[in-house]
Amino acid sequence: MFGKKTTLTERIEALTTAAQLGEGYLTPHELERINSVTAQAAERRTLSGAHTVVGFFGATGSGKTSLFNAVVGEDLGKAAARRPTTSSPLAAVWEPDGSEELLDWLQVEDRRMRIGTFEGSPLILLDLPDFDSVEPKHRAVAERLAGQVDVLVWVTDPEKYADSIIHDEFIRPHASHSAVTLAVLNKSDKLSKDDARDVARSFHQLLLDDGLKKVRVIPTSAKTGAGVDELRKEIARVAQSHAAQEARIAADVDTIAATWAENKTPGDVPRGAKKELDTYLAKAAGADPIADVTAAAYRKRLGQKTGWLVTSWIPRFRADPLKRLGLREEADELGVHRSSMPALDASSRAVANQGVRAFAGTAADGLPDSWSSALFDETEHIVDELPDQLDRAVARTELPAQPGKGWGIFTFLQWIGLLAALVGVLWYLVIAFLPGVIAPFMEPRIPEVEGWPVPTLLILAGLLVGLVLGLFTGAFGWAIGTAIKNRTRRAIRDQVAEISADTVVNPLLAIRERYITFLDAMKKAAA
Image 1 (spheres, one colour):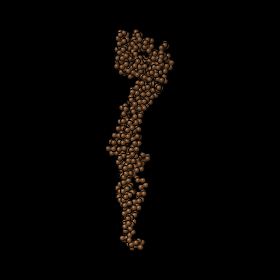
Image 2 (spheres, rainbow, N blue to C red):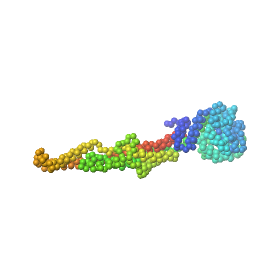
Image 3 (cartoon, one colour):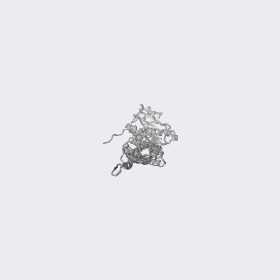
Image 4 (cartoon, one colour):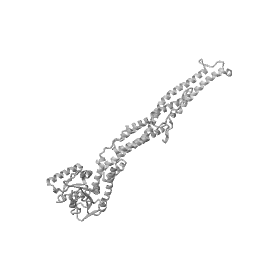
């Protein structure tokens, strides 16, 4: 099934949307062209839709005004041999009712109301200043009205039909207006029949080279009247269709949109680009060393909590690894807190910048120069603020360096073992230094178990239990520390991933998506 054809109104709206999306990316000239087309389209459609406006354009000496008079059937325009032949536009109007506002918009003051009939009326024929006039204001009038009239009649002669001015500066820029363009080779009476045919064929080929399609050359002679009736019929044919106005607007939209519509829509950014960026930023943020320090802090604190009490107090004299780096364990939910870690050094900044610019290069793939330049400009702003954002990512990460309360059972057992050993030591001390005190309460001999004195067993058991528990929790704590390191690394990477999305990916992809939306609008406008 075929999709619904896009209406001209929808195309104009799409072009307007494209102009809005292109602000800040298109050149002032490009924006001015788009806004001019949309503004003129809106204005022309509010004015008389019944009248077809036909403009006669030509170089000095082409006989344009004489031909205009011949088509009108009366000598309205004053032809002159010296430049410029026409200083201001002149309008011949058939059925003038409703044409006033349209002529005001065209800024045509010299208006001649025709009483006779012209096949295809209501109709307005305009005789315009020569576009090669030595007077800049005359040329400006011709250029302005070339962008406003509904039908363009290019009038040339055997001497100037190949002039670069008419082709490069007027016909070629309006090449998409073939449907509302008529080409006239005037003064054909100066040539033989065969020569006139050859020149007309050469002129036609130049028009094809200019990009016009389905346009034919009408040989005329204002002097003899040859071809004038045929030209009048062609004007009537275009006017009678009542499609010239819409066709002209559509051609204007095509001229603007076609160039952009040919561009290929960029594809999606590869998923791996974001992962690669996160890897760079996590490295720059110090995910690995922070994970190592967190694991070391966990092991140190676990050792202090569950280690052999005879030696577990020694690590207390060493600085806590996290505090040494200015890190705290609690996550900052609001993201306002900054860690007390030193600012990123040059090496870390280089790593972060490398990652951001690599992602920017991927995001800019397929974009035109103006959009990619804007994207890389945004990249420079991102690079400047990224160190603070990475620092906040670390500050927002909860560092699991504190052993859980469940380890308290081992602390309790360590104290039981130590107390048992102390009881054994005190037992021997009392026997050694205060035998009279203990004698009434104990037998003369120290109690034994399987030949081992009970105090000795208490000392050995207490010390051995503490040592074994310390070795066990130390080994177990080392394994858990490895898991803590991996968990910390993942937690930092998760925070960095959020930072990279908010600070890097979304702003850069917003520019890319804006271009894609702009391009879609242009393609719709050119439909």
